[in-house]
Structures are given as structure tokens and as C-alpha cells.
Image (cartoon, rainbow, N blue to C red):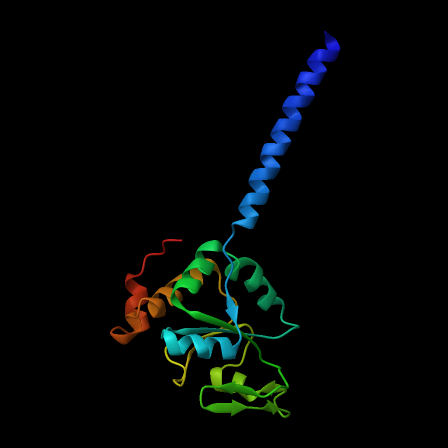
Length: 181
């Protein structure tokens, strides 16, 4: 009797471990991720469908860039919204390779130790990470330097993703905005 009750308890324990691990693994597998594109892929997609472009300007050594990847861009609601409304491109600000963006080519700037694209994106305050939103490929972007949480990035994404920037200044939009995520 004792052996059979131990067997039943073991079976129940194994069953719950199996269910828990299946749930955990499936939730990780189904988690939405940002579809980061190369500049060339983004430009090809822009021919078929115009969308705002989100640029994640980062460096390899930047701690907060990694935190933003892990906590903000990996959030399933953020990722789903970006994938639906934007073309997302990651660009290393310290790239020594020429960066061709629209009708311009940017080179590495030895004096500033960054690619000139980083200076173009963020002319007033160069910091990392910087999230830059280009309403159109060849327009000056809106650059937001620094780490942003899910709560911080949500209104920015909605402002550009819904096209509100065409008719309302950001501060007026932000004063009325209620976070949903």
C-alpha cells in the first residue's frame, strides 16, 4: 500500500512538472520578437508599402542598449506593435562600414569615433541607446536618446505608428495619452 501511494504521488508530481514545463516552453516559443531588418531589406519593403522606420542606434559596449533589447524590445506587445506599424532597423553607431541611407552615404568619423549616421540621427545629443523614428526615409528623424521602458516607448510608437504626428504636436498628444500596455 505504501509503495502504491508513493507511485501515485510520483506520477502526480511528474504530471505537474510536465504540464508546467510545457506551458513555460510554449509561452517562450510563442513570444513575439521584433523583426529587425537590414537597411537594404527595409528599403525594398518601403517600395511595396510605406511605413515609418524605427532605428535602434546602439553600440556593442552600451549596457542600457542591452537592457532595452532584453526588457523593452523583447516585450511581446512592443514587438507586435513595431512589426505591424514600422520597419525596424538596428544600426551600430560605431560601424566603420559605410552606411547607405536613402540617397545619402555616411562614413566613419574618426574624430567623434562614430559613424556620421549616428550624428545625422542624433545631432543635438549623441547617446546610446537612441531610438530614432523616421516618418519617411529621407526626412530628419525624431531621436529619443536613452533607455526607454515599455511604458516610455508606447506613446512614441503610437504617435508615429498611428500617423498622429501629421496633425498634432507630440506634447499635446502625450498630455492626452493613456497607456494601454
